Length: 184
Image (cartoon, rainbow, N blue to C red; front, side, top):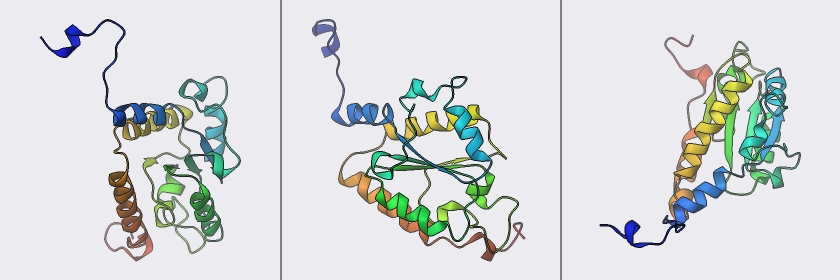
């Protein structure tokens, strides 16, 4: 006989961290950063056939100050990288990044000086979505996986410390162009 049997019906027991995680994951507001063909698939996911509104994401925000999820869809050029970082810095905390497509994740077929070989060299990435271009169903699956991460994320100082460590590790990582082995 636990406490659950003694409480009247309609009473819900949870932790503050669990409740905050549920609220955060249920109200993600994405900032669009569509740079190439992946952006078309991202727009299709917001349309009536796939309906991202089921997850509270019906409006893609044009202002980074109103968004907490950045979907980087497509290849990022060297000229666009500082702009991407500035938009990321303008987003309020907590914030998440989804790298959509193989070009955003690793540079894709564009292995040259003009394209950033992975957006994780510019901003810390929470979810990588492969494909060229990934289908809207894949984007929705990645968003649901991000919901799981957000729902179980710690609050307060522990979250800030984990975010700082992840960002430092991403920014000090060796660029893909300098790696040896099967990549070249």
